[in-house]
Image (cartoon, rainbow, N blue to C red; front, side, top):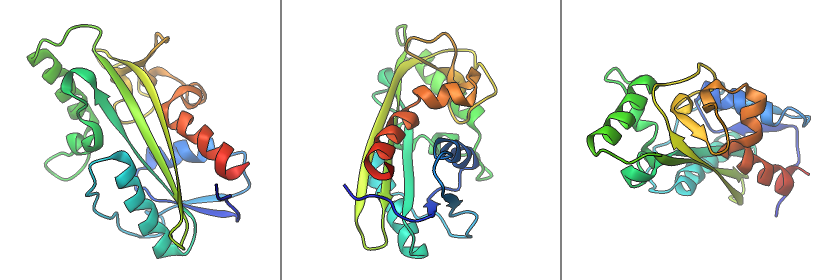
Length: 203
């Protein structure tokens, strides 16, 4: 396992919510987290069919472009009754006609599809996160985390981002959208993957 050394880390994401969440998760370490958006770098096309494959594309592209270690996250919602969809296409389900992302529309789409097939309750789902840390020489380390739960309706909470307002983690009464960042960051799929990342690369 290769250790991270240095004081700058590039986050291979244009997602402001994800950047804020990752900065919080890494706040105890003396390093600056800079996003590819802040550096004016484009997002590479995600052509793989797995979270790991797409995270590797993003992490290696950012590491090559900046000459710095880069961290990429590919994550998504997998709904059991929808055979794992939206999965790696989670963000695509939120793509509006004008090119922006509309997650209210995406959440409505998920619920409507479950209604259309009369999916039984509880409507089980999981969030999966794969983190890839890549170095400019082509080396990488991979970490994966999951959180099990169920899809609920109506949407609840204005915290978090993405599909958080319709996902209630197992063992909790609140959705991820209703949880304060500190609470969410202690149980989320990204938190599980980050613990593995920190234990493997930063400690």
